[in-house]
Image (cartoon, rainbow, N blue to C red; front, side, top):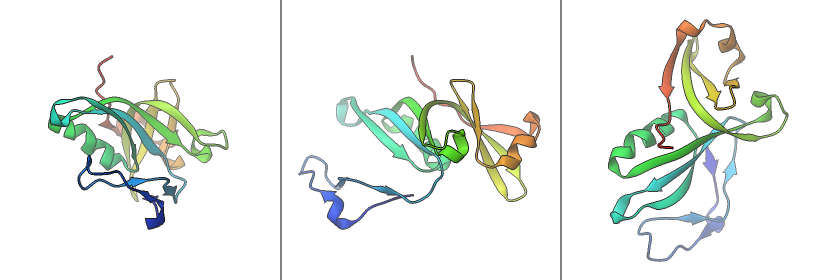
Length: 142
C-alpha cells in the first residue's frame, strides 16, 4: 500500500474539488504494483493521467470503471528484484494477469509483453497451466 504524511501534501487549488496532491508517497512492501497510463474522460475532455495501483483487485475495478469515464492506454508491472530476478525494481508492459489457486488463496502470474512470466509465489510455477484462470487483460486500442 502507498503511504504518506500530512507534511507531504501539496495544495492543488480549487480546480480539483476534494482532490489531494502529494509531493511523495512511500511504498511499504516489496510486492509488485501497476503503473497505468489512462485517460480521464470526465467533464467532456480526455485528460491524460498516470495511476499507481497497488492491488490486482483495484486494477480490475479500474478496468470496469471504463464505462464510467476511464480509458486505459497501457499497464506496466512494476516488479521488485526478487520477482524479476534482477535484484532491482523494473517496469515492464503487462499483457495479462492469471490467477492460480493455492492452498492459502489466489496467487498471480504476470505475463509480460516481452514473453516473460513473473510469479507472485514460487509454488505457483509448478502447477499446470490448466489450473490458471484469466483475471485481467488490458483492453487497449493501439
